[in-house]
Length: 165
Image (cartoon, rainbow, N blue to C red; front, side, top):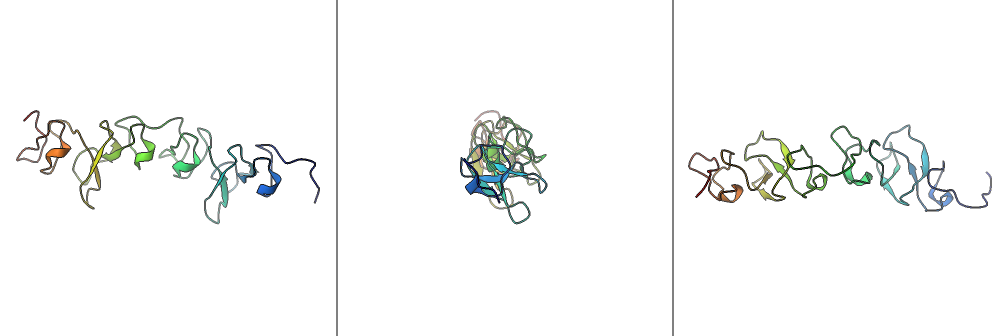
């Protein structure tokens, strides 16, 4: 063991947080073989016994294992790598935190519809089988009798959004 004259800077290899000037030592990415380093963010996140502590505010391209909170952008992509920015409307999402407009829901009121970032920035809870569905759905989208899902405000007798009232 060596005594250090001063604490380690961000990016330097460490064994514990007491060694770091910013007070946080964690893995440089959410990978079991990533080295422990002093975190530039000054914060870590506990990611279980296999990974232990991982630095937060990871850059684009860093491994994040599905945890949005590890990424500087707030978005861990489907490939488990941090993205540059939040997702645009229409892009596939896992949760609302991933979306620039703050809403992730089914693209229409069908159990097999994909989850996407909602152009409206809003969702409606449609029960456990559907979960969240985007609002302001276009004409022809499945609405299951809920007028509030349709941009026109009218869900037809065939359970599809109509163009207008």
